[in-house]
Image (cartoon, rainbow, N blue to C red; front, side, top):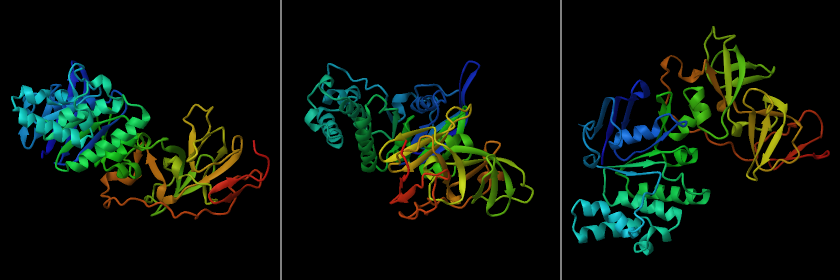
Length: 406
């Protein structure tokens, strides 16, 4: 069990500042995930915690002890790297046992530790095999087992699944989640660029950007309450759409006139005097619906991607700005070149002014986060989604074109 505290931590290489003013408290037993764009310093921060990179400024404490100058071997930390880094001439058991042999533990202790790790990671049948006889996922589990046998206070994972194919990533991600559930008192810090890993594994996500922390919170809290446009577009795939407009009417519900002429009702309060404020209306692709409610967007479909589970609609792909994307559930054939109207629940919309969410304006003290529940199925309206003909109808949530299909 270990608490970590980073206070004003900074890292620079000569005159180049990589990280600055990192303030973060990680409580014992948490699963923390660092995410951010390439080059934001997430792996560097992890290596500073491990002691593999020197801290330029600030302090790192583990269980109240300052660790800045403590060597890695004495920090009670084990790290799983992106590369498996297994010894090819050693068996699985010997690879996991190597650190314990160096530490001078007895053969009985080593065998008990490797047996336990092998059972936890479903590697027992492979303990006498060489790494070349294992799949990529099994090799990654051996690397994790090498950390488990040391029984550290803190586990550090540096993009451990990035070398695996899609199917193995899913399987190994589930195994890591089960591993954490079996060791609830162990603190784990995980670096990834994969949003699915971050959203499904983390107790809290730390979003790094611009050399600092952009936002810290539970996965769904960052998804539904992003503090700024960067976090809003970084969390979620495809990224959140931003529609420019101006505040028309203020109050508990805000009316926004969009540049295209449509009006949107947003469940974010604004103040008298905010009328005319330039804003970006944020709407996630998956929150756009064809139910015939008050439209927040209307456009011609340039491209569709039919994935079976969902259909992605792309608008404005030839513009200089980022395209608008809608993510509709199910199969929607024949929409290329069609004019489409889409609505969104006012509770699902976001408002940003100068890149910052109006929800957090002036340090607003928000109530505790409560996830927004999905709407009951079958609640779609009957108004046609496509105003320019075709007589399309909606049946069981699927658009059924009556006219010719393109």
